[in-house]
Length: 95
View (cartoon, rainbow, N blue to C red):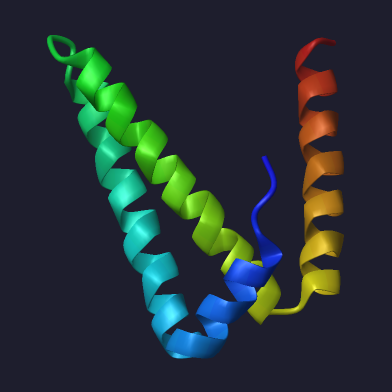
């Protein structure tokens, strides 16, 4: 899934960087809460899964905003190095 880059840039422009950073914080917090409820909610698991899915969508969007507000090249560098590290850990666990 791709995020509408024009929408993201317009939101940052309209609401401001500080407000969008607050949104990143709020949405990440809501995802954490939804995941905690998911782990505890055996009887009503489908409702919990839907909440997690919705919060993942929100976080996906606001993280794209954060990506655009901060240093995209530096973020890409960190993504690559963290993926290499994760591959290394996966391969080590199969040894």
